[in-house]
Image 1 (cartoon, rainbow, N blue to C red):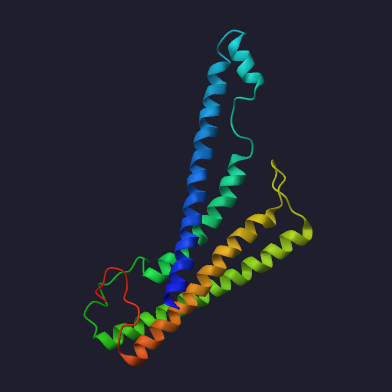
Image 2: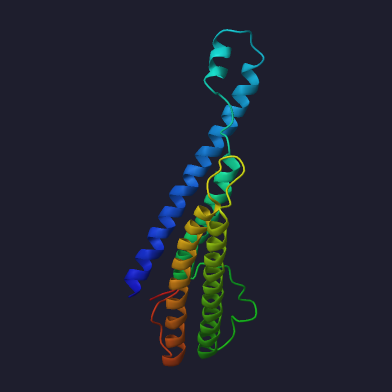
Length: 188
């Protein structure tokens, strides 16, 4: 089961990384086009006019694409962060607690994380249905907003699934007193 969850988390992270890379390239090209457009307006007619006629300039709706894509990327990285225990922690108050107390504390935290991820997925689902029902679109590109919600819902659902799995694992660890899935960076 752990191998399947880890594979799901890694696939989602790879998809999120690929999309984030594409968005970075999109923003860079848009900035380059915007700057080239400004520079080309300084030159006399001829080659600069031809380039402007070809449409050299910023990419139309780039911020709409970035806004939608980054939402998916964030949710796509959550499953890997959840399964590897990659969330930021502050151990100042808990570092001296006995191992059984730490196990139960980790279990409670994982259960809360899982519950929050489930609520987020549920609310994204409702939001997606609402956007789809009313046919809302983006301002410039006019693509349906529910598409971005659907992509984010896929990531949030994977995060909720992995979060629920990790909550069950941490509860089992607390109940049995032994490590089933070691946290990232700790010994197996």
